[in-house]
Amino acid sequence: MHDVTVVIPCFNAGSFLADAVQSAQMQSGDGFRVAEIVVVDDRSDDPLTLKTLRSLKEPARVVTNGRERGPGGARNFGASVSTSKYLTFLDSDDILPPGSLACRFAALQMAQGPAFVGADFTLWWGSDRFEDDGFFRTRERPSRLLKEAFANNSPIRLPRPYVAFLEATLCHCGTVLMERELFSETGGFDESLRFCEDHLFFIRLATRADYIFVPTVAMWYRQHENSITSGLISGEFCPTEKYSRALRRWLEVEPGAPTHELVRRRIQSLEVESARWYRLHERYREAMQASRRALAIDFTSRPAWRELVAGVVRR
Image (cartoon, rainbow, N blue to C red; front, top):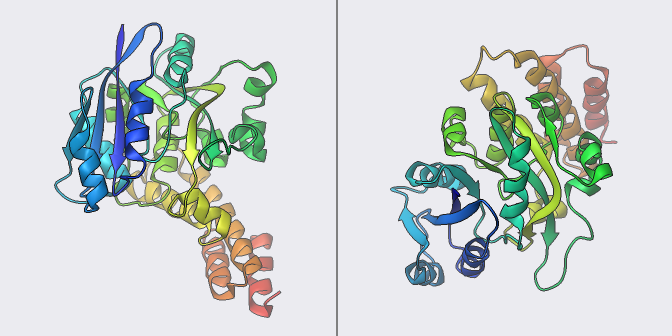
């Protein structure tokens, strides 16, 4: 019987937290048990959240950060105080549907050495409003990279797939399952990042371990006015720029990594995509800045020059 800890970072999420905890507590299946649910209070100050935190009972336990550390720091702190062999994470506004952990533990039998398991998820607007199919299944890059799993409706194992993870994020914090030791060896989430810290973590993880993907919806990603995906849909911020910043951070902390040139090329392509995104949103100054960053990596890049000229003439 394997013990698993569910780490739930929380900052002023009192309206949703109890549902998230209950969904983790209800997980069951062969070969594992939810030994503890570690709720990390990231210095919440909302009265409803504080009341909800005080009301939680075992197997949930609340720990409090010494300072506000953001979602990545909260996950790191929760992992550091966990006691189980296995770790998984769940944001405080999301839900694990029945069978979420069971399908991931069942896929662990495919592991041949260090491995982490992930699954699909779906966007959820509360009540019975769901996106029709899984997120990865319906997006161009993930569905192409994971097509074997979707075609056969069965898990697949990708050996050290950091190149694929550089092209597209193929895992979500709410669907990942791994050994706590592997999490520690990877170094956890980069606490200097408030966006895309999970993307960077998964790429680093994919350089050290195989990835087992389960083509099953294992998490409901709640959509509300404060959720990151809602910001993406509304066009409040450019997603590719956040991603390129995370990759630049990787070059800073691991300058000698063998993937260095691959990462630089990916950053360059992301900056071109960012320039195009800003231009289409008529944010021409930011479009030109992104184009210049792309040209700083490859001065001969025709797409970057096209975007720079388009930004200058505002077309």
